[in-house]
Length: 130
Picture 1 (cartoon, one colour):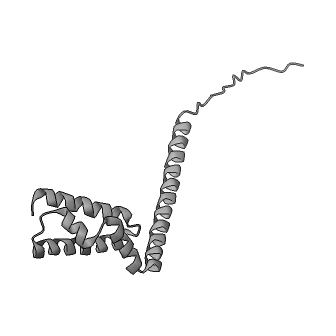
Picture 2: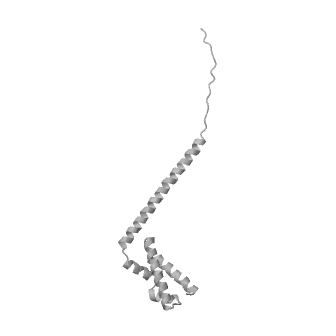
Picture 3: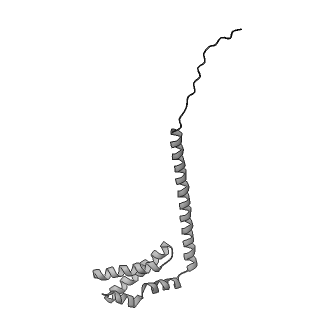
């Protein structure tokens, strides 16, 4: 396979990915399978031009639409919701941790800067006379 065809296929694959809105694992599996199909087709048919790939497989948006027609969208949505929940929990935990560190640093800084004033009393002996 020539370098130009390889670059064109990489762009083609990237364009397809841009249309796939699903969790990473599902997208990766689909794209790995699709890449294998493309490279097998190239090997079996001595393809030398990206136009032949477009003719056989279709444009990127059409491939993505085909993915969604055949995919279990409920399963994909569930996976995306789980990923979204985990991400939100991680961000909240990170904010809480950062706030705790900030409060600790500020508190330490403030306690080091507190000036202690000493008050001394001079008690002299006075005699009480009648």
